[in-house]
Image 1 (cartoon, one colour):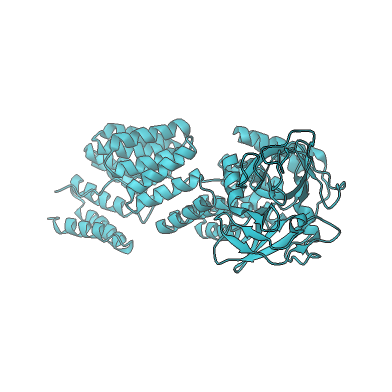
Image 2 (cartoon, rainbow, N blue to C red; image 1 turned 180 degrees about the vertical axis):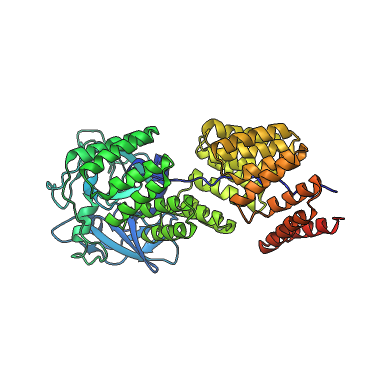
Amino acid sequence: MKNYLLPTALLGTIALISYVSPAAALSPVEIQRIARQTTVQITGCDFGSGVIIRKDGNTYSVLTVAHNFQKSGCEIVTADDTKHQTSKAKLFPDRVDLAVVTFTSSKNYPIAKLIDNSDRVEATETIYVSGFPLSTAINTSVFSIVKGDVVANPQNKQQGKGYSLIYSNNTLPGYSGGPVWNESGELIAIHGQGDIDTKLQTTINDNVRVKTGYNLGITINTFAKFATAAGVSGYAPTKVATIKPKPAEDLLATALLEESKGNYQGMLENADRAIAIDSSNARLYYVRGVAKSQLSDRQGALSDYNKSIALNPNVALAYSNRAYAKAELGDIKGAVEDSNRAIRIDPDLPEAYVNRSLAKFQLGDNRGTIEDATRAIALRPNFAQAYSNRAVAKSELGDNQGAIEDSNRAISFNPKLAEAYINRGLAKYKLGEYQVAIEDFNRALVLKPSLVQAYSNIGGAKLALGDNKGAIEACNRALALNPNLFEGYFIRGFAKYQSGDNQGAISDYSRAIALKPNFAQAYANRGVAKLALGGDKKTATEDLQKSAALFKQQGKMADYQRIVTAMEQIP
């Protein structure tokens, strides 16, 4: 009897993400990329900057300062260096130094994400100002972004013309009207004024002096407060909640600090204490949900996300994280629905596309996984998890070289992402590079010892190298960590069969089938093992018939034909 065992099935690992918004600070490079795509230059009437905040059909709205429009003939220059004619500026009442202008284009330009409540911005926070300053060295203005810190954000003490946010960024003329960003890449204010020390020497450009004092910006809350009166619809005044007792906020800050250290138990304990003080704070349940998720309490995480959403149903990240929890609990349909809700609330949230890619992968929709991961990458070009997820889907579709390239990108952006090594190893395994694949699986285990798929994949690679004993040992370690790992039983069963232990192989294949009833390969291999054991031809044939039916149902016609051919050779 020939050996009709089918190739060992290795699993790549979808990288799961679960971010706490305040702790998920973007890198300066990521913020620069967001700013570059959404910041515009104002020319033709003056030299200034602005930011795209809205799109209605082919009409884009730009938020800037009113003093940029003291002359006529203004044009907007977008990130692709295209010039656009502007509408008449909509000026804000009460001498607030804000204006909104529009331009039309059939091109697709990104939109800045506005912070939901700029009053939460506190002194010492890191912020960025982007714009097109008049250069100190050349007369051509180019996109620039400068880093600084918030000095003060007094909600009830404005400095005139709506200005209230005070910060330390070193700006130049031309930044006026440019966006002010927080570390999450959210628009928190519009820059408009800066102190000028006239005693300093002028720069090479005689019209430019370095601003050495503090800068002033008009916050998004002020914009929202006056938007309707200025004829700008869709921006309701921010409802500022009553300030809660400070201990809850202190505990929340401590919880986020513990999260940044990777101490999720400490994060959970501080979130518990904060909720005991303030049980109606949606953000606290959200943070505790993340802590529970990181501690593998998926049901507890789901419960906290439910509470957070009940208290505030408009936070995209809460739906995205709940989607992850549902996917982990097997509610794939619910995971897709929650991801869709997150995307409806915030179409530019890359985490939502990555978590939806997880659900699609679990549904066997590899092309859908690639599509969502690609969308996430378009929104955040250095999103390591998105590249890693796209890699495993490409590998499933046979594009192993593409999978290796995407895994390499993921590792270049995050060398500590264990899943990326798993997925690169999977692709190398499929290309026959078994020893190199084992090296990647071992790297993954150094970074994340609990990653059971790495052990089972090592088992598969050792099996391919003829090391049946090593394969069994690797699978034993995987199954000790997760007794419900169906692929661990499948690979160990294969190794036992190769070692002549047909009864042990049958037992392991049966466990794999119990965990995954539509596992066609396991039925085929169990049937072959039964034939090798002798005396059980009827049930062996039934297993092969079941395998063939499943392969046909799953559209795997080449494997279906292999099983049919095998059955024809049974005496």
